[in-house]
Amino acid sequence: MAYNANILLGRIAKVHGFEGAVSVRLEKNFIENIPDMESVFLEIDGKPVPFFIQKSEYPGGDLLRIKFEGYNTAEQVTGFTGCLIFLTAGERTENSDNVRAIVNYHIMLPDGTSIGTVRDVVENPGQWLLIIVTSSGKELLVPFHDDLILSADKKKGIIVMDLPEGLLEIN
Image (cartoon, rainbow, N blue to C red):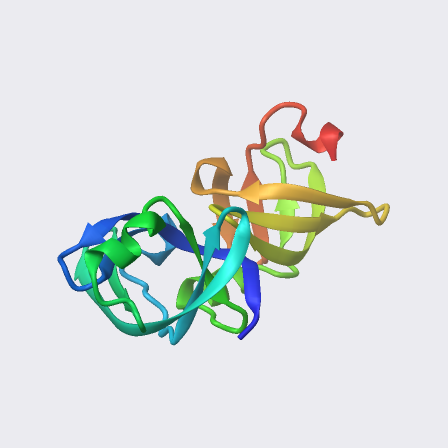
């Protein structure tokens, strides 16, 4: 089981019940898209700590209930409230595979200027980032968010993005 700080599942919102379960507030891209998990890492005092999952239940919305192996009372898990939960390496979601499908797409600005080609997609905690290679070979990191996308042409492999002023200059 390897720690993957790039895949943030969510944050423990509260203790659920009296038998050691917790409620996890899911990151937006995991709502209704829960991966199969045997283990996770909790970030406790800035360090990743592995936990095996005894049981998980998705009642809907943005909450997931998890019961960890070896934790059987509310008192044992109370200190976990607020901790970030990361997936272990190798666990992927359908959503992450869909986003990775844009590798090799061309990114354009609304005025028709070419920014470059998507070389890779990185799932940063709470944010997808595109690694774009310009025609001069320079790498740019650009946030991949619905609010920045004006249009996408799947047949041509082109995405038109309206990027915040100055973003390309800071890369």
